[in-house]
Image (cartoon, rainbow, N blue to C red; front, side, top):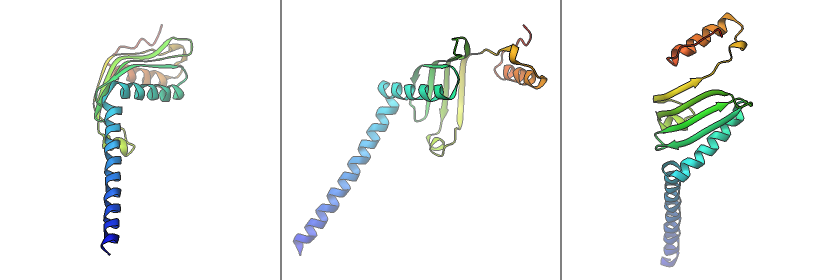
Length: 150
C-alpha cells in the first residue's frame, strides 16, 4: 500500500515540476523576446512585414528600443509609394501602453511622442471640399502648415 502511495506522490511531484519548468521557460522566452536586441529585431521584422502587407508601398522600420511589454520607441519609420516617393516618415515614435489592454485586443496608448513627422499629401488628388477640410485638420493635428494649392 505504501508503494502505491509513493508512486502517486512521485507522479504528482514530477507533474508539478514539469508545469513549473514550462512556466519558467515561458517567462524566459518573454524576457528574451521583449528585452534583448535579438528579440526586438525579430519583432521589428514581423511588424514591418505585417504593416507592409496592409499598405500599397514600401515600409521601413529602422530599429526598436525599450521594453516591448510596457512601451517602445520606433526609430526611422517610413512609408514610401511604389515609385519610392515618401508618403510618411517619422524620426522616432515613443509610446507607453498597457500589456493588459493589448491582451484584450485593445490599443490604448497612454503617452505618445512623435519626433519630426512628415506626411506628404498629393494635392492633385484632393478634389472635394470635404477632403480639403480633412487635410487642414490633419495638418492642424500634426502642428504643421499645409499648402493646399501648388
